[in-house]
Length: 93
Image (cartoon, rainbow, N blue to C red; front, side):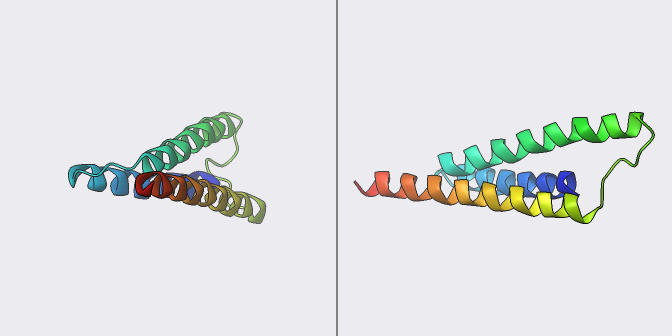
């Protein structure tokens, strides 16, 4: 489940980043969050493939894996918030 959640978050941040870039104001904080979520999705995709090769289900839909997905999303959003705040303060200085 954490794989599905991180892919969804990566797609959302990718869309937000490229929309901002198209408008002429690319955000470093969005770019960093986008790369973090794509990195996590890549990491868990390797884990999903390894699970499938061992005969297990491709995606783990357990409560623990869902909780891990929410923790990763929360951590990514906290990092994004901190970076966006730093970026905004630097722009006003």
